[in-house]
Amino acid sequence: MKQGWTEIRKQEIPWRIYHNSFLNLYKKNKWVTIRFTGCAKGGIGYEYCKAFAEQNYYVFASDISQRMHDMLDLSSDNIETLELDVASDESVATAVNNIISKCGRIDIVINDAGIGSTGPLAELPLETIRKAYEINTLGQLRLVQQVVPYMASRQGGSIVNVGSVVGRVPTPCAGSYCASKAAVHAMSNTLRVELRQFGVKVVLVVPGAVRSNLGRANTDSVGNYDWKLYKEFKEAIAERARAS
Image 1 (cartoon, rainbow, N blue to C red):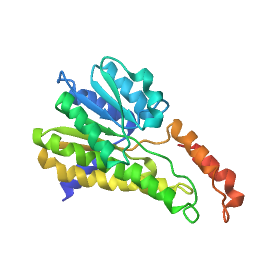
Image 2 (spheres, rainbow, N blue to C red):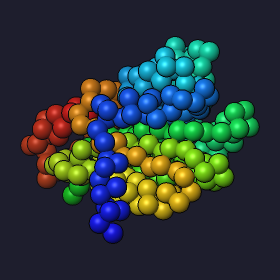
Image 3 (spheres, one colour):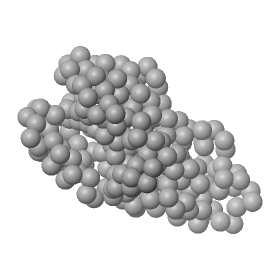
Image 4 (spheres, rainbow, N blue to C red):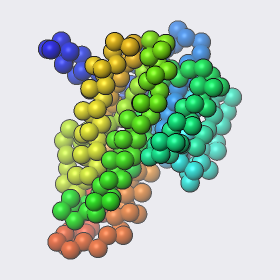
C-alpha cells in the first residue's frame, strides 16, 4: 500500500514540466497521436497544441462548436481540429471513433477542457455547480471511458488529467470550481491504480494561476448574479473570478 501511494504522489506533476516529460517519453516513436480537449485560443490547450505539433507529433485539437473559430490558426499538416463537447456522451463517442477510424490509435489524451465557477457556495445556483462538475469532472471521465478500451487493447497509452492547485487548497468564492478539481484529483489517482495492469498511464497535472481566457469568462458570468448576503463583497468576488 505504501509503495502504491508513493507512485501516486510521484505522478502528480506541475504543468510547467509535464510537456518535456511527455516529449521525452514518446520521442522514440515516429507516429504519436495526441488528443487535446479545450483548445480555443487564449487557453492552456491552445499553446500546448502548438508546442507538441512543433515537435512533429500528430495532434487532434478540439473545443465546443461556439469556439471552433478560435482554433482556425491551429490547422497545419500535423494538427486537425474537431468539434467536441465533453458534456455530451454522443459528442465524445463520435470524436473518439472518428480519430480511431482515421489513425487506428490514440497514444495520449490531454484532458484540459474546463470552466470557471465563481461565487459563495451559500448563494451560487446549484445549476451552476452542476455544470462545473459536468464539464470539469465528468467531462474528463467521459473521455477516459471512451479511450481506455482502445488503449487497453494495445497495452499502452497515457491519460493526462489537468487538475488545479485549488483542488488541494480550496479558496473562498471558488468552492464550486475547487471541489470539481478536487474530484479530478481523486479520480485520477484512482484511475492510475486501476489502469496500471492494462499498460495505461495516468498523470495528474496541478497548475497554479495561469493568465488565460478562463479568468475573463469567469468575470463575465459572475456579473450576472445578484448576491444577497454577499452583496457588499461583490467586487471581491469579481476579483476572485479574474484570478484564473
